[in-house]
Image (tube, rainbow, N blue to C red; front, top):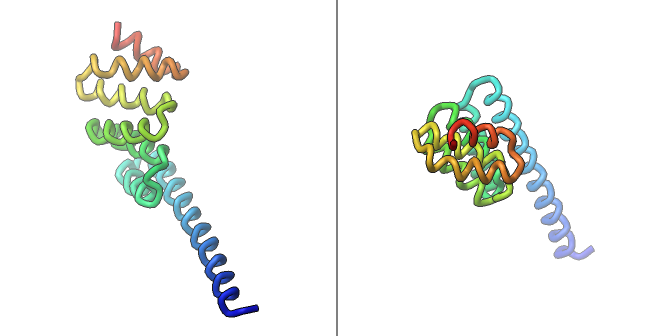
Length: 137
């Protein structure tokens, strides 16, 4: 085998290995974030989801989950920013519209929340339908 072929083969193996390590780190921080969130460690969860976002800025789920944790800390503005990004990356996620609406309710912006609830309801969210009945009628 020629030296260039050996080098390219080694380079390919290194790239594949690095991609696997990166994916494992993402899964590790993602799972850790979920675990911390369910245990009430919202700041820790935000830190973990931020690490996932740094590596995968075009993936909507970590923005959504980070937004939920910001919401739980009553950082409604920060939550809305994350839900906006999640919606921008996946405009068919009813949960992000619903949670953005709830964050707007937390900011006392009821009229701004109703279109989010309506969109979430159209996308299949039952919680959004209940929110429409509670906040938008």
